[in-house]
Image 1: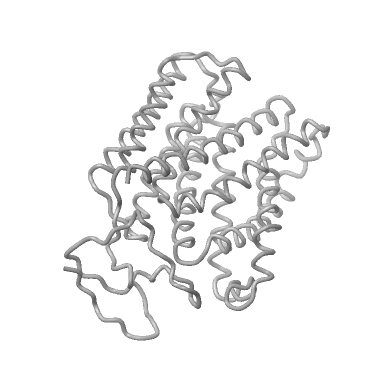
Image 2: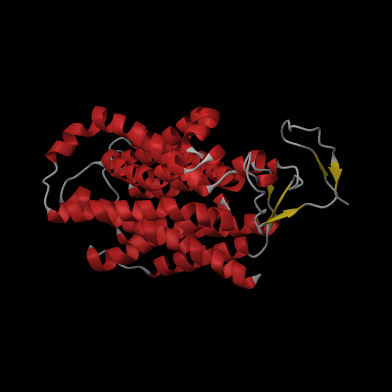
Length: 353
């Protein structure tokens, strides 16, 4: 159990490091080379996902083939692709209107969104220690924001703070929806299907948004090998994040992943001490270890699912083998379980003693 807990924490920190790489390359592109192209950067990532995962679905046979999936669920993935794209866009856009402190604080709104959606739609139930761990993580995030204020770290223009704050809240809400939907898909269907369909519809919608909103900015980019290398670095980190996140979510949960990502800003800050000569404060270290303590507390015990795993969609493909229930989910005793939807045969109610 202790080994699994440490693995869960470590996997989350790998995701944080990838986000750190995304942030650093974006900072160099926007501040040093004046390349403000968030939609184009997302478009590159979706194209990579399309080339790797959508083409994998295209060559599969049977019910897992791309066309078969599109016939059954195309509109659901179309909505998910649009949500994923706009979540990224809204948060990046918010930097033009509000302060860094507001973005860091309000971005934490994704955590209660994920918890509520997981509770009602994935039927995940939490224990007291989970809520304690969440509170400790958020306190650590607050400590980091306080350190930013004390050392006078650049806060941004904040010219229209209300608009910026609303953009962050909107982006955090969409992130939460996307993460919980992702967890549901990778547990009931497959990781490759999720990434393949995100690549397909994400590339489609980001291409349209790029042509309408960002084509002029793209023409202004002073292309050279350095800018090309930064775009390659950004795309590699983004592709790695999208490819690896489903693995971590299946091992842990969407809630655990979002708590782990709170350390991403701190990794960016530690890199900034050397690259951008940020001022250091001991509160940053206190913040980092506080978040890690919260993660350990959250991961120290398992969540459980309020449905019998034999009935709760059976975590299976429609025509594929049964997928094992994740180790983080345990059945709650003395609860009556019923099916969530119609099955081909009538399923009896199951009572677990």
